[in-house]
Amino acid sequence: MDTIYILDGSAFLYRSYYALPSLKTKDGIETGAFYGFVRAVFSILKSKKPYYFAIAFDLPAPTIRDKIYKDYKATRKETPSELVSQIPLIKEAINILGIRLLEKEGLEADDIIAYIAYRLKEWNKNLTIYTPDKDLMQLVEDKRIIVINPITNKVFDEEAVIEKFGVPPNKLADYLALIGDAVDNIKGIKGVGPKKAVELLEKYGSIENILNHWDDIQRVFKEASKEALELSYKLIKLNPQEISNMISIDLEDIKISYNINMKRAEEFFMAFNMKSLLKDLNMLFKEEIKEKKVQKTLF
Image (cartoon, rainbow, N blue to C red; front, top):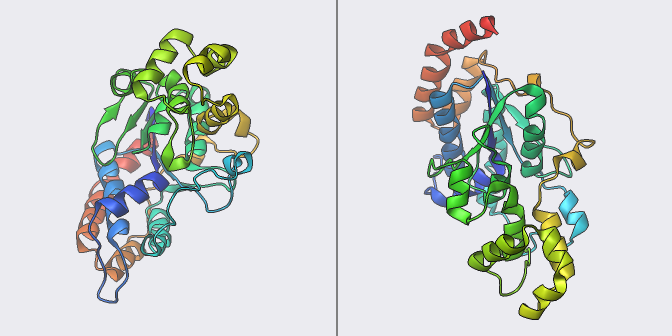
């Protein structure tokens, strides 16, 4: 009851598509990413038995970062049509399973998850984020907020973040701004890799202080652009306070409902010949539903 579980749906969607073999129904409908996604959701439900659980998604509409930088994510390949066709199936499955889908025009899934992290103290809850995306690791805080990679099951607390990147979570945005991110078309400082980024942060402490000592930086990195670094940091840093007027989520909104329509669910999964998912579904929502109803009466 003390932990909110959030799955970064957009990031996991892409990873599951590329990580799993292509599956098709007898009618030729692509279902590989759909199968992998729902299987991961069932795994979370089975292992954590969450009371609060939601899934965050990006929307195709322009985001606050696109308005700041028109070439944001411009280097990304177009989403394969085979994946696009499975997104409605995944969202319908989420709805059928009684799980809240979180999405908002202008915001990315990262922003929505950061907003939930921002509300934690008010709600007196912990947060577990399931994502393969390193950007969300900047939210990690003691044992209160952790990140789990849903593909490898690697758990990232503060110690694990430091071990992987060489900096604590509260400096991860500074670190990523320095090295840049080719996937999102974020430049960083040319010539600065992971090792040098750690050294710069050990010396200067933050992007703000690096910018205040820009003459020293440019003597070493002659092609460095102050404006590019400022932009990189602005694109990478998650600032939930700044978007709090764009979104409103209450704790009650992210409760999972275990009172699902089993007939509808069974018909949906059988329509795509997902017999193994149907077996898991019956185990999760028939055998364990009594336990969840008991819990609900206690809180």
